[in-house]
Image 1 (spheres, rainbow, N blue to C red):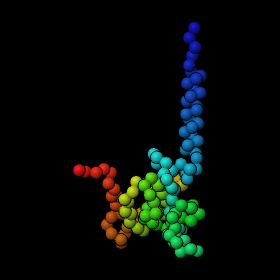
Image 2: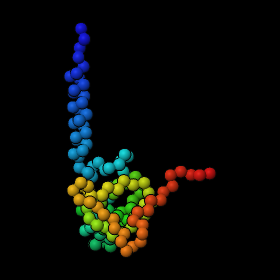
Image 3: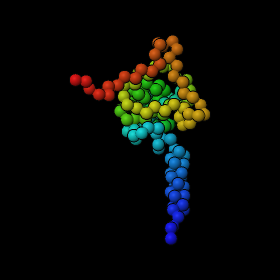
Length: 137
């Protein structure tokens, strides 16, 4: 007598779909868009500040309530493996990326509103990515 594996397969498929749905519906700050978990999540918004108003110290961009104003400032404050969530809006700046980072625009939902990096009037380059992956020699 042969026993059907269909109920077991269906249960496995439903479990997989549930796991995917939970992963897709989880808060964005809990699951940054990167293959490896970033060391620190940083935030940038058009209403942010690169310097904290009370202390006058550099903002490290790690608090959702006090995001940085410039994406480049968040990049400078970051270490390899960090994530940067950039809220929708227009950012007049250029970016020089020299670290391995996960940068997500349109945070928390890129489908609702875009993030635009606009270098108009600054120079011809909007984004420069320069990192050494290996060593020659």
